[in-house]
Picture 1 (tube, helix red, strand yellow):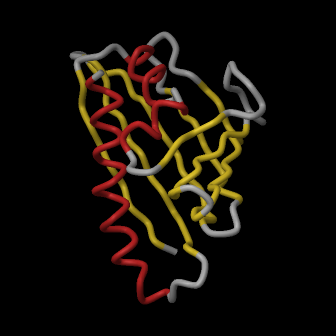
Picture 2 (picture 1 turned 90 degrees about the vertical axis):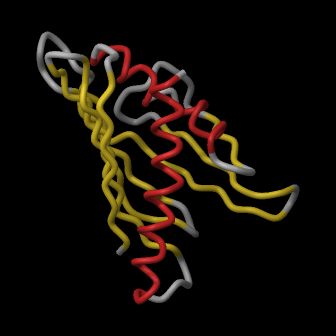
Length: 144
């Protein structure tokens, strides 16, 4: 399984950083050829399902994810969102933690993913690509 971790510090208060990094539909704006839909509807809670569709026209794949833990930050307490990736191409889990700091917040995003048909020796390449792609996503979400 490919594992990667991304961290960002932001001057945003934890509640605002949380709102931005859990705005699922905005995630697709920073990933080429990807859109995100939330078929279960909003607001997000445990049980919410969203789907990242990556591809061009009929060529592509769906990456369905389910929120299995939803604990927004509150009164000096960190927020934690855990996701299960349940697609036929991408499987695994992710967690997004938003910790309040004296000057804003600290966001920690950890992914553990397995890409179908890719041998395990490819995991370091998947992890490296994941850090780059999701690092851009996280930066874009926190910046605007």
